Image 1 (cartoon, rainbow, N blue to C red):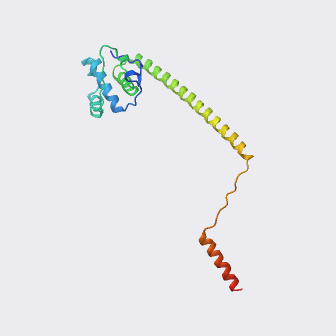
Image 2: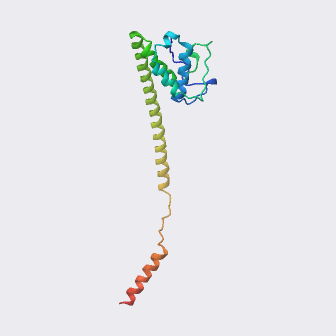
Image 3: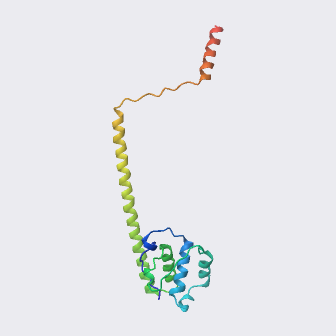
Length: 172
């Protein structure tokens, strides 16, 4: 049976991270389904789903599985693992396994939310420090003498004003 344990999500050879598209994830999912499932298990998945993966996969992306290692050690992307979890939930899991899987997913969501909350707090602290540094620098500059910007009139406005004054003097 297919067991899905979150191992090295989103990593590739030598542990380097890589952005994975859904099209690339479909290649990984198909490789896992074809190499780890028996024909009986494979036939539990509707043909439309398999056809969707086949039709939308990235033909330029090559993913190799090493059958000597269990699926947990195959360095599947997060997206491929998520798709496999959904397939497992929909077509292989009994009611008890679905409940356990739901609890695990809810726990993962809470952990991710907590991590996002901590990250946003870190960013807020950074921005507050930046703002406080800017106000200190502004206070330093208030005691300095600054130049006043003088706006120059355009030459044609000066000419027009001079002409206007000459006409007023002429008609007085």
